Image (tube, rainbow, N blue to C red; front, side, top):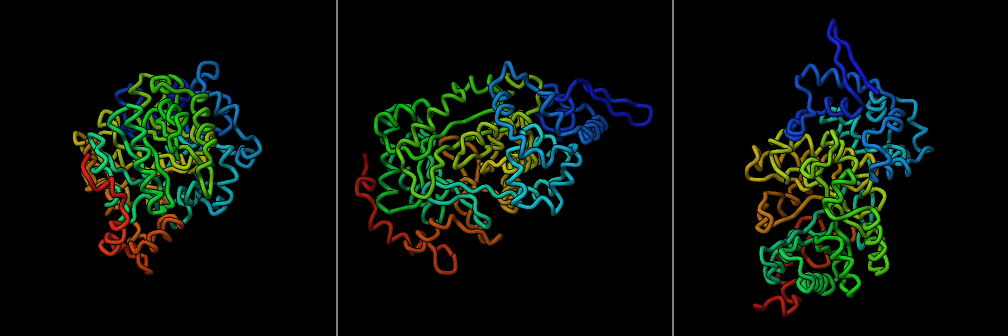
Length: 465
């Protein structure tokens, strides 16, 4: 079905719905690279006006990637909750924007209708929104999950402690873990990107983090970010696996390039659930996404990168993860050129994820060849935390020495919690106070807690290999 919009004597023609979506998207380098972006500001505005008039029902009929050829499309269609959708089914995309911004769409209402919103609907309405609109609506969306602590409560901001090391040296990883814990990071997860996929080496990392969590009784969870097939194998071998990680994308072809499909993810979820390691909940999955991953796999089928990103959240929603985060600036300037594009993308991703009922965090980051700097990241993380972001990353000095990119530090988490009056997950906050890392006023006293933790540090972590 084609679409058009007329301005005076000029009529803009759009071949199909995915063309309208792409042309209506705020400018970004990835869509220009894919050849789907609007060529002028006038064309972009015409596409937005056209998009605003499209009924939400149309997204259930005019599928942007065919049902027959894509399992993500089949998942979106087959799991669509018609009863939840009935509350908004009479709206156009423009009406939907106005409804989301109104007081009628409160937190309880947004939670109720979330199963009826498809990723394409969420992506569409985000394209009509200013940054402040994305922040306002996302703030109203509360997505709460749990494993050994409770993530996503209003007024909370969690952090992933990311103690990466370029050679997986256990002392280096242990030092980063200690550093992060002393600054109140790690309630989302202690998650390591390993340098190797060797099963014995991965097993050592699992036991390393598990030893620290058990030694100190930390109410948090661990994750080693290796391929899902490795994690299934490690579960079979008896590894202490808390969360199962996998990068996911918004099309079947892109996921195949990752070596995964939905059935494999369900298998991994079942394996993790069988271990029964959670104490306050059973959300056992951790997903990462990022705008541009589908295009980089040549698997976007003419769909803009932000809509592809939103489709990945359908997979996440289906598998009830503890955590999902967009690694917003990691892929590079080919997809998000500068700080302005990274900031916009981060706000879009957070809005779409939360609107769909996904616990969305963000790796607020950039690569050194992008036209961005730490000031841009300060802006984005402050905007996202204001919008109710689930979690950010915590890395020593904001500089990941293993993955070689710039992200957020332990101090950034402290800054956001202090400026915006946010707290860690409640179970983790109690532990911080017990360990004398945080005082009764919520102030982190790293030096006070250091002596207490070092006294109980497992001895094998204090000696060289």
